[in-house]
Length: 215
Image 1 (cartoon, rainbow, N blue to C red):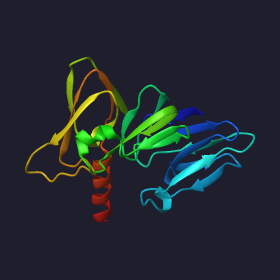
Image 2: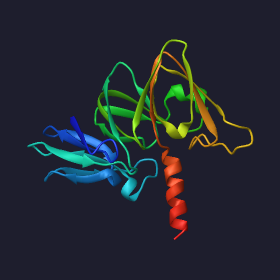
Image 3: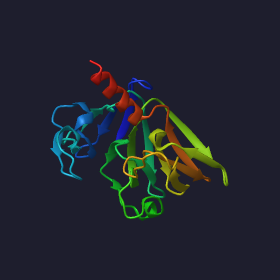
Image 4: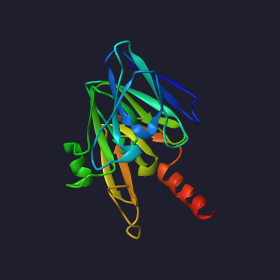
């Protein structure tokens, strides 16, 4: 799969060029257009229904393409996985994953963050392209050994799975949720890499809701 982006960084669209018979997984809600003949197969996972249902797009014998767009204004960012290391990605942060990339919400490495609960992150590994949807633009943060940084989960996009991480309450007076990251903050220690976004999807959704309610 080859990924070409356009209209970045404000309103990114990713065109996925697929080889004959090649498949890619994405939410149906992200679909803009496909070349003629691409097979669209909605799947059931985690109670997702309707437009947000995970969907497999498979190219016909002559190959094809799929255009995908994030649900919020912003950039698209492509990670190429080589099988040697994985990434921890915010849930619904992945715009598209190659069929050779595996996603796991119950990765053992999350136990020190979420215990037995399913949290606001999923682990991806394997080989191939992982296309991320960003609210705003992407910042790549490279941590040297022993370097520390604290990030609010709403602005986190992804981090390399070998980066040390710790989750804690931002304040004991705030409501907290490991499912959404609300009221929590993440500490990271290098070496490692992080991808942050310049806007929070949660804040953007709250703003849209306030606009709608003000009509």
